[in-house]
Length: 390
Image (tube, rainbow, N blue to C red; front, side, top):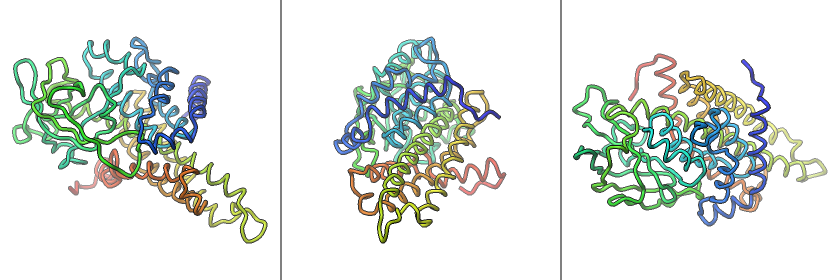
């Protein structure tokens, strides 16, 4: 195994660092407070060619891989954005880019990939439902065949960035679950316009990740054209998994970067803060040990994430590595950022020191985009050969 970055990868990471440093922490604090989409930041990312790093060259991408995307997200997150940077890459080069590049029609690739890569359009994905969160096979949203297309009805929840998206990747049943041989059959993916008759959305008030909305989505007799099918009819489940598992990779990268940023802020403070004498509080093991523990765990998550990304780039199975990386990163980032807040005492609770935002944002990823419990179920059954418990 070669754990050394190439010169090209170092250059890509340095480009991301410069962009991240240009916007900085105050930019993200303001946008979090205003619940505003970071449009200027995303435009700069796209202009530098970072959005399309893993997408095909013929459509304006760099034709590199998921490992390079992981490096970019990690660096941008550590430069100020925190874990929500992973969501920006999730909704655009993953939900939009990967799904179209791997399973889209030639027309979709030709017309949409250049616009996603340039930042001209944003995307989102509608999968989760009120009664089908982790159990995606039980979704009720249904696309009924009608002429050369379909008519879509149903409801989705917790859909990220729908209000700034032009295109929505919708996962729906096209054959009822009681009519298929396997529950994984009968699911299809469609790429539809967000601004379409019968499609409405409403934002959900939430704790964090405020620079990207989370919405309820309603489909009421939404017309879907034949050429808006992504992948195969009734065979979308296994194609969707490639989208979901790459989603884990950018999520982990965002968490790794957020933890790195929080550690630097809090440790810098601890080296200067002196109480009960002339020793800096950073000299006390009660502060050092939790940082050291979280750092060790984050480094392990980072390496597992790099392995997952490398396996994806080689066309090999990577789901286990992607899920393990996300599990450990979410836990370590959550506890590590909270310790960073504790280290700074009252100042860790102040918005001006940025830690409270990093903590609020990172907390989401203990249960999204997949919960810790479902990852443990996956490892237990797929890697340990234990019987299914649910």
